[in-house]
Image 1 (spheres, rainbow, N blue to C red):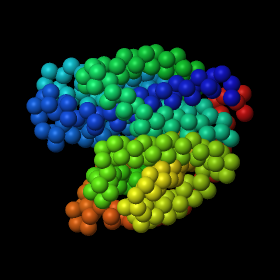
Image 2 (cartoon, helix red, strand yellow):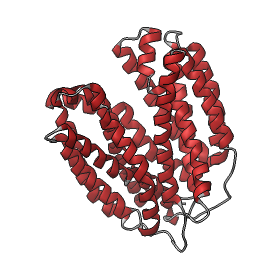
Image 3 (cartoon, rainbow, N blue to C red):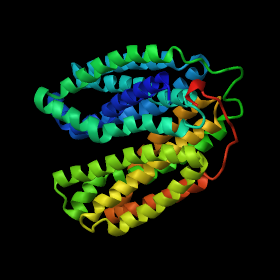
Image 4 (cartoon, rainbow, N blue to C red):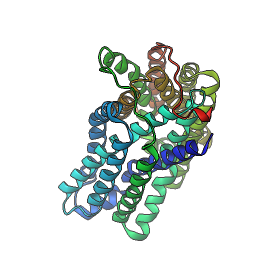
Length: 389
């Protein structure tokens, strides 16, 4: 890998780490925000909801526009808007303005996250695309167990508003860095309407991600409550369990990249979904088996996110000319799956209890596997950095 490749991966990793921190840090800050604006916890939860809905709706537009006009300019715009929205979050004069700030944050991240995936897919050597994508995905996942706790620690010393101020400052610096990094990347050869005849096929492909997200998040959203209810875990034990899960997710993503480049994205994405089904069944059986739960949470995340990373690499190969919009739709599919998963998880808990959740998730994993067996096309593409071969 040459210097330009290392710089690109480093910038992509740091940028996605910041985006992940912005996403994951809000939840632990909600009690403090609720107190500051004198609103209920349920009301502050709308900060997360409006962010996710805005992201899901807007991301495909940025994907389409970046395929047509180049990705770097939209990533830079997204980071500048990200900084503005976080400053507005920090100093919102009312709860209404706070919600508006999170809508703008969702808009900004929709212009950044999927386009980072797409541009890395553009410039990666064809024989290393899985590894490159796995590296930048690990930046987003590292925020789950590193970025969010750091933000919570910052709140303890300087208050919750300081968290958003710091992210705004870093976002501004990264806007400059990203602009300089991606301005050398050539635009795609956009000579036709990329959506013509392809949209239904794209939606069919990304539906695999929606069902995968259900298999992961129908349980993960309620993991803390389930561990407390079924295992009588303390807050520190729940935190340790989430840490095992987070580390498994990062390692799964990184390992998946190596295996994807060696054996092919199609084989690895299918294999991980089969293993995911088995692991979820085991998780259901051993959920209340004491310390074994840490091991199974680690393996669950490792296998699950290995599947996500390999499937992103597969989409990057199978849709080389529509990579921006496909990555955007895939991220929209992810957020839709998270939303549906949380709804299914709530229904299962209300009617059958926490122990049934892993088994319901395993059914979703099987469906995702079946949907993912259809191959789009065989496509090979050269890297934008041929010297990396």
